[in-house]
Amino acid sequence: MRRQIRVLALCILRQDDRILVRETQDPHDGQRFCRPLGGGVEFGETSQAAVRREIHEELGAELTEVRLLGTLESLFSYAGRPGHEVVLVYAADFADRQHYAQAELPGQESDGEAFMATWRSLDSFDDSCRLVPEGLLALLARAT
View 1 (tube, helix red, strand yellow):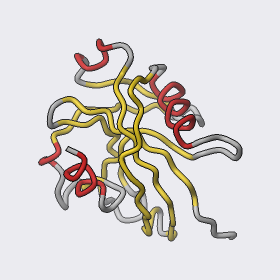
View 2 (cartoon, helix red, strand yellow):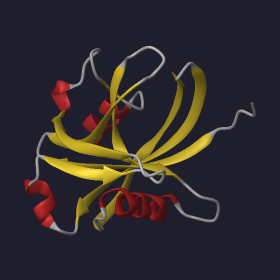
View 3 (cartoon, one colour):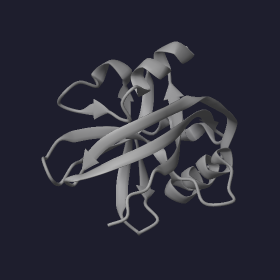
């Protein structure tokens, strides 16, 4: 297995003290975690273009006011395998304000897997459901 560093662009969509996340569970250890929406940056694509593309692909939504908040480096384990990501974290707003009125937003991954994105309060993340990547809560605290 060839190990590579993956470059991601994640989008912080915020409504007061809540952010839009997808809750997932590690199939190896059952640990629950939440992550903002977004995904991999493709070769020849800027990270800002990637975050716009990912939100459009996953939610069918357009973004406005896209701005870089910072960069995080993440070393982690998922499904029993080590991972290494460089994560560019963007803040943005939905162009269609009606998305903010929805408690849940249905989404779809590029492989066709359906998911539900939910608004979660920043103070709701703890050891039972962490916010990833590591350092994201601190980055968000500095950005406000």
